[in-house]
Image (cartoon, rainbow, N blue to C red; front, side):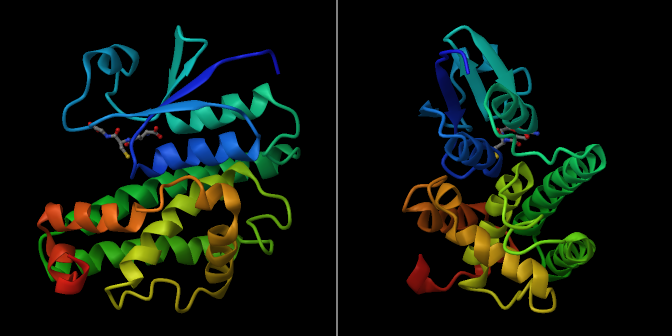
Amino acid sequence: MKPQNFHLVSHALCPYVQRSIITLKEKSIYYTRTDIDLANKPGWFEKKSPLGKVPVLIVDDNRALFESSVICEYLDEETADSLHPTDSFEKAHHRALIELGSAILNNISNLYSAKDKVSFQNFHTEIQRKFQFIEKELSGIPFFSGYKFHLIDAVYGPIFRYFEVFDSFTELNTFAHLPKCDLWRKALSQRKSVQQAVSEDYSALLIQFLINRDSYISQLIPPESR
Ligand SMILES: N[C@@H](CCC(=O)N[C@@H](CS)C(=O)NCC(=O)O)C(=O)O
């Protein structure tokens, strides 16, 4: 890799930021980071990010990339030992399931924003339906395709992290009948890069975020967690 200076514009809870950080860590790439307030975006950020979303990767202080999948693939291509499969179909398959991961993140956002129990349960059913599909696609242990960690693993680590927090105060049991997904999520939760993609107060920050949402899930959070 040519000597380059990487700076990630971030947010403490963002799962798309986390997948970029996991990729940086898996590839041992040095980077610096600035967290921004998404409710009060700085002017310099708006100039770099046409969609107004994090993550943004600033390369050598003057070039910027947005969209987490693009950032992860760029970092992967800039460094040796690709985190994508070499076989074209396998690579395309991983990319397709990465897209599915982004759709699951949209469903999770719908889930925690749902105002009533019925829509909350409907969104959860939709999430489980997608994981039932993934359960059939999972070919490896401990990670998606076996022992090697891939970009697809970097995408699903932050998705599963939501359920660790949800499981601490709900009866959702999302993976109760999905044994392969359950093993996969446990393996990802043990991976250093996945653990280090968030700060130690992640769960507390997420719970506070969910309380502030003032939605159905906010009511499920017990007083002792507030
Ligand atoms: N497709 C984008 C999604 C990124 C995204 O949704 N980021 C959220 C935070 S997790 C954001 O910046 N939201 C601010 C906004 O939409 O105003 C990616 O993969 O990078």
